[in-house]
Image (tube, rainbow, N blue to C red):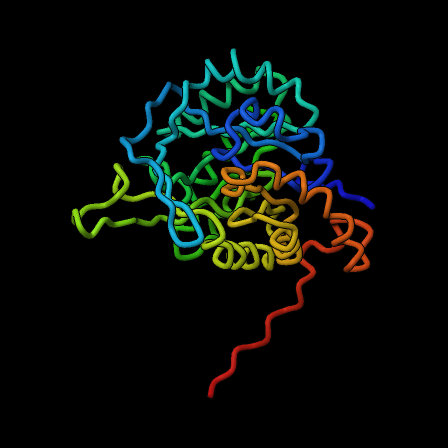
Length: 308
């Protein structure tokens, strides 16, 4: 059974990754997760300078999901490279760094610094964080998306993954712009912008007001975006959104994702990703497939809409 997948220049042993912001820097999961089972780990997003994040409360549980407004709380790129990456590079799986810049220039300076580091298999560009000022703006403009991806690609030899926002009318032009800029893959999707309200206090619950919705509630929406982009055959897709079990994974794969990131489920069941990897061969056998690649995008076309 061939579980390995190819995303442009990036090869993974299997299609199951952990999503940025839900797995810490992996050290937090040591003792709970067999890292060698995973296709890869995407550690928490790193910014140029340290960030204290948004005011609390930063998370709130919603129906079948979670709103978060962490605000990219992190110790900065220098700290990541000096303290987190030495540990991450010892792990028996692929490590995909994730960076976010406040400006285009920050993305480029960070890419320059990451290019001189070892231990990363690829670099994911967080162009779409919905609860940080400015972060979402990059991924709603095709020209800006293409320019950032191209400039990072020119400075950094690592495979490049563009993480895109669903908070836009049509993601397809943005995905195409990322491809034109030289991205090896796109991650679809980041969280959906939402709000939770305390009606008794007549105010938002989150300290930031709005936050990013994740978890099972967004899976149908994320699947739709993956399917729409996959039909255009633009570039490989990493599916994200409400993935908690093997059925969720298989839905994303047949809809057109070549790999997936397991996210919110890590907060309440950190062993889910390993269990999914172990169940993947049997799921492929059920479809009489001998490899993951055989089933990617194999969903039958939707019937034409009718009136009446």
